Image (spheres, rainbow, N blue to C red):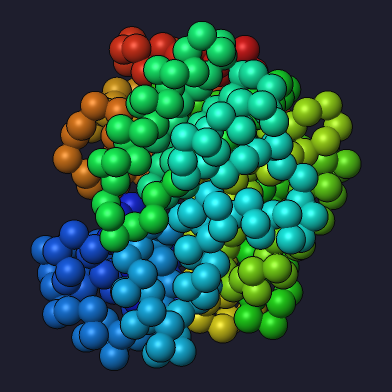
Length: 380
């Protein structure tokens, strides 16, 4: 069986690695070069998108910001999973909010902004502080503005207005205004839905961010009530989207309630821990689902955490001597703040996982990014 992935980054790479034992061949469409490539050896090319579609028995995506013409062409083939509408929903916060409201998934109070009058009305209907997010192409903290005081409203609108005027006229950019939620922590749920509508979910993960970028995710155990609540929301969202594949939902936990922050129609950074911590990792389960195979167990097999490697292309070799450590590099060119790889840390018990994480923290470099990660790890 052959699978084409739209996008040729690290997620396509990890899908390809997971697909090899299943005897599934994966090629990736590089949206930058408009060439189909080998995701493990990107210099090896296989022609244009139409060649990739002809090659594939199924088509999927590794990210949601894909040209709509590309999605339409793939959908016409009858091979695209999840659907183009599901992918577009993950890439447009306006569509995302509509879908969440349609399936009754609780989320932050919000307003949609296109003009200055919308901005002024949002200030009246929402309470400060307010976070403004670009509807399209915002990720890792980019395309966001925080308003804490009415005195800064005019300056904030000027920044937003400049951003909207500079947007690609072919794309209808907009802004979502959200009332900021005083949450206890951020958690996420990764789950999978097959072509027959069967779903399974992984354990919730607690997430920590550094400068707006996910830096640590830890699989949670003994969170039965929250897990059940998250699984119910996953089922409703996945059913509403008629979804096929792995889907991630990020939540704000406020007391005993989960509010949806955003959804991601793909394998997700906060699910990388499943490579060492779950019976079937998210990458294999996504490949299984979109290729029409039965999905595998999502059960936690041992306590596990994931640490993103941000902006570094080397790490101390002493990390390999720490029990339960697995390092995954993406083969990228080094750039400040860039996701270069990740470290999965596993152990037989939660107490042993904490000990191993503390050893990892000691071995990590003493730069600004890792200093924040170290401080968080030592508080776990």
